Each structure stands twice: as structure tokens, then as C-alpha cells.
Length: 327
Image 1 (cartoon, rainbow, N blue to C red):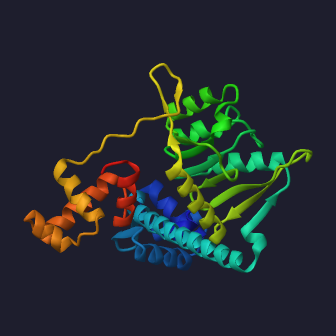
Image 2 (cartoon, rainbow, N blue to C red):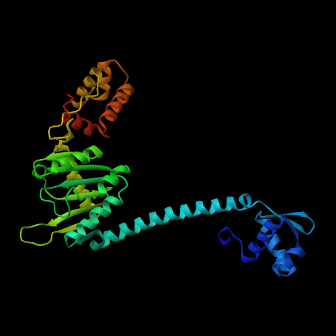
């Protein structure tokens, strides 16, 4: 049982006897283990080198406390296993990425029916760690919002949901109540007059895209997309639709509001003036001269404005300011 920490069967038997006896001589150990003096001596020398036993007097040995002797070894082995596991995950991901580049079947899997779509939609949500993105069109194909019992548990463990609903879907019986409940649980929801495709993406790594849904066909089909430029294109499509869509909120009475109010601008007049100069294309050096501050202060204040807007670049900041009507 102690092989994982480097003890062979003879060493383990000898060590266990020393633990139970506190101290013992080589001859006593030999009689209890039925091993010869040479075998016992070899085992004791090996364990002494490992810090498991100590010689208290000539030919007499005692066991070192197990938690001291074996605890550090177990910790080192656990760390080594953790490092090996991380390396294995990195190598596996690299392998899968290389295989997908050479084999389209590894990149895209066709789901032939409604049951397969439902199974994968639930699986994607159950295994999501960070974010679920979704386009919800009128006339659900795999399952309705009420049947999606994976979303509440995913939201509860911290997964972010961003979902865009087609307006016609919100007009279906009971749908507004379902969306209002999802918003209360933490879903970020928006609405748009019409969506181009039916789509779900988990952690920006795997997407499910409905392929065929025509009147008269008994079963819809979908593509399960694992990475690649196709998934990148779908993510870009989602973000563009998200920017165009109208935020949804829940009113005090619990009803769903399709005309959510724009959040108030978080910037003070000075930062708004700086932002107006920035959007107008005035260089930082000229802004600093006009405001009577250093160029470094300009850059620091711009960084603060970008943080307030939740963007990474100045181009994104200009787009965000226009969309939110800050200027």
C-alpha cells in the first residue's frame, strides 16, 4: 500500500513493525518478518536514507513519525501528478487542435435529429465554466425555455448567459414569463426583430448551429463546431447582433420590459470633455496642452474611461460612447 511513496514490500513490512513496536533490534525484526539479517539490514539502510527510520543505538532502530516521514513525499508526488496532469491537458488540446486542422470530421460533427441536439445542448451547459451565448428564434426546435433545466444550475455556479431573443419568440404564449424568470436568475437578455440563425456557444470553444429546419422534414439537423475560423465567425456574428439588440429587463410587477432604459453615463463633465476630444481625433499631446495637464495624465484618464466603459481599445471606446449616447 505504500509503494506510491517509494517503499517496497519488505520495507513496508519492516516499517510497520517498527511503528507498532516503537523500537526494535535487527534480530527481532528478522524473527517477526521471517527475513534474513541481510534482507532486514538492506531494508533498514534504504529506509534510513529515505528518512523513515533512525538508529537509536548500535543495531537498534526506531521509526520516524509517518506524517513527517511520508507526508512530504506524498506532497511532492501530488505536485508532480498535478504538473503531469496539466501537461497532459495542454498536450491533448494541442493534439486535438492539430487533428482538427487536418480532418474536418474532427472540427464539425453533424447532429442528425432533435434528440441529439437536445442532448448536446444540455451537455454544453452542464460542462460550461465561463459563458453561454445564444440566439433564440421563434418556434423552438430541440427544447423550449421551460424545458432547459440546465440553465438555472449553470447560472447558480457562476456561468454567464448572454441570450438574444427574436421578437416573434417573445410573443409566443408563456415565453415572456420564462425570459423574465431567467433574467431574475442572472441571464443577460436582449431582443432583436429577426435573427439569422439558431445558435448556442459554450465557453467560446464549442458551438451548436442548426443547419436544416424546413416544413415537411420530420427532424432538424445541426452542426457541432469545435473551434476553428467557423466558430470565430459565429462569435463575431453574435457580438454584432448583441450590439444591435435591445436590452431586456424585468419591471417591478414582474413583467418583461422590451424597452430597457439606457444606463446613466458614469463620467463626470471633465472626462466627457476629454472623451469628446478623443473621439474627434485630437492627439494626446494636443489634449494635454489644451487641458493644461501632462500627456501621462491624459493617458491615465483615458484608461479610467475605458475601464468604466468595459472596453479594451480606444476604437471600442468610441463605439461604446456612441451606442450609449454619452456624447
